Every structure is written in structure tokens, then in C-alpha cells.
Image (cartoon, rainbow, N blue to C red; front, side):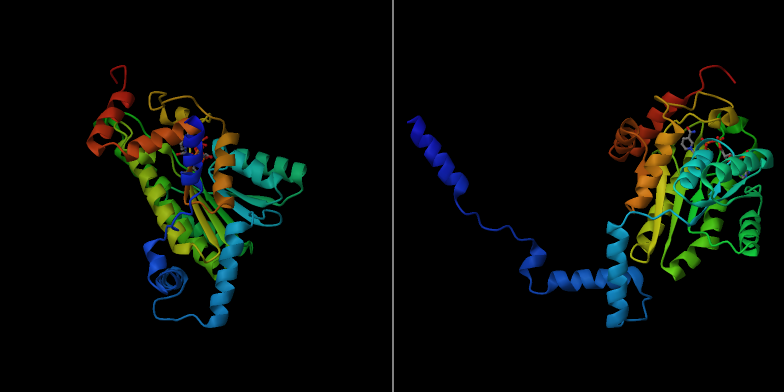
Length: 331
Ligand SMILES: NC(=O)c1ccc[n+]([C@@H]2O[C@H](COP(=O)([O-])OP(=O)(O)OC[C@H]3O[C@@H](n4cnc5c(N)ncnc54)[C@H](OP(=O)(O)O)[C@@H]3O)[C@@H](O)[C@H]2O)c1
């Protein structure tokens, strides 16, 4: 009896199954037509139909982009907020991989010391441009400076940023304005300055540092969370626009990371969970660039939290965040 049931089960298992076919495969030519039209929309201006040769070159480039690791050696990266924390680590890692670096922040002394160390250790060209990127026109001035020095920027790392914490009515309006200018306006302005040339060359990378704070509203850090939601959405949109044109755009979303960030915020209360290291955050960001991914959250726990936010009603998420981020002591 037992023997027969095995035979029966095996017969059922081995029976040839009808091949499952996607709807697109059932309509002759539909899949080909759809993919071709997505390809065309992806990379060609609406009013120009690609010639066969251009199309072949473009598809070849896209394949390369998707299967080839990013080559760092000999290229130049511009890193904002390179004087400390995650930005300084980006500079160390990228120089270690053979990239020349342009280091940008306000603290000239710290940038110069880092540039000298990187040049001595890795033999790369390491330059400093001091800039307050929260000022209107700062991105244009930075771009003019790199043009004056004839530097081709192959990778743009928009990392400079800071946060403010506390009940909204207690926060300094000017400081919040600076936060939006630095975390949002400078990111957009620098993308405008460097990305079109990358697209013309058919090669380049932009890595924007967002945050896990961008996945849900962050009461008591309302402005900060909103700026990072902007950076995340903006980067993912550009990823889709430039996919297939040789330019990789990614957003890195670190959770709490060991840097002076919370000294600048002025409170530790806006932090949730275990802090990760700058090395981990940078490794996650560069893996996203290498794999041409639109965004990457640093760390498993942070990834799970970010996913939770996606499946929780927004009002519930806002109230949960309020609970977590609420200042303990009266301010
Ligand atoms: N640490 C975290 O837990 C965490 C978590 C998620 C996301 N992030 C994001 O990671 C990025 C880097 O932060 P971090 O943690 O490395 O903090 P950090 O150590 O305080 O570094 C911030 C960097 O931004 C630069 N900066 C600040 N204001 C500037 C301005 N007006 N113009 C030009 N540069 C300016 C600072 O340099 P100067 O002061 O010399 O100008 C510094 O190099 C930020 O975008 C932050 O939002 C951090």
C-alpha cells in the first residue's frame, strides 16, 4: 500500500506539466513590442526614433552598465561634506580604490589635512574646495571652480547635510531654512551642474545620501525627515530617467551611524536602534552604485524598519514615530 502511494506520488510529480506562459508570451510579438517601446522611451528624446546603429550601441552600453562592476581607478569623485563622518569615509575609501577626489565642506583645515593624507597614502590627486552649500548660488560657484581647474567629475557624492531636532515652534526658522538649502536645494543644484555632462559622455555616477528618516514622517525632526524623503524620491526618479544612458543614480539611506551628526543636531533623542559604522554605510552606498540600484538601506534592521513603514498606514506611522522621537525632558 505504502509502495503504491509512492509510485503514485512520483508519477504525479514526473507528469509533464503544461508550460506556464505569461500573457505577454501568448500574444504574438507583444513582449517584443512592449520591451522595445520601453527601451525607446527610456533613452531617446520623444521626437527622435533611434537608428539601428544607435540602438545597438545603446543596448550594448546598458548591458555593460548592468553586468560590469564600476571602475574607480583614475576617475574623479566630488564629495560634499567630506570634512567629517560619512563624507570623510567616502573620501578615504574612494581614494583607496584609486579615485582622485575633490573634497568640499566649510572646514578648510580638516579638508586640507585629509587631502594631504589621501595623497600621501594612495598617490591620488586630492583637492579641496571650501564652500558653504547652504548659500544660494554655492553649487554654481563650486561647479565654476571645478571647471576652472578643468576637472571632469565622474562621480558626485551629495553627502553634506545636517538635522534639527525639537518641537517645531522651538526651532530656529533660519536654521531650518539652511537645512532645506543644504539637504535639498544644493543636491538638486549639484545634480543640474554635473549630471547632464555625465549623460552626454554616457558615463557617470551620482550617489545622494538620504536617510532611513526619509521613509516616514519624523515628528520633532519634521524638516529633516522631509528633506531626506525628497532626496530619496528625487534620486529614485533620476535613476529611472538615466537608466540605460550610462549614468548610475542611487540614494544611500543610512540609519543611525557613528559620526558627529548628533552633536550637530544637539540631541541624541532623534536616534533609534544600534548605530552602524561609517565603513558599513559607505560600503552599502558603493554597492548600490556598482549594482546600479536606485536606493539602498544600510543594515538589515534598518531595511526591515524601512519596509515596515511601506506597509503601515501613514497616520499610524507618524504617530509611532512621534512616540519614538518625542523629547524626554521638557525643552
Ligand atoms: N550619522 C547619521 O546617523 C546619519 C544617518 C542618516 C543619514 N545621515 C546623513 O549622512 C550625511 C553625512 O552626515 P554625517 O553623519 O557624516 O554627519 P557629520 O559628520 O556632521 O558630517 C556632515 C558634513 O556636512 C558638512 N556640512 C555641514 N553643513 C555644511 C554646509 N553648509 N556647507 C557645506 N558642507 C556642510 C560638514 O562639514 P563642515 O561643517 O566642515 O562644513 C560635514 O563634513 C548627511 O546628509 C546626513 O543627513 C547621517
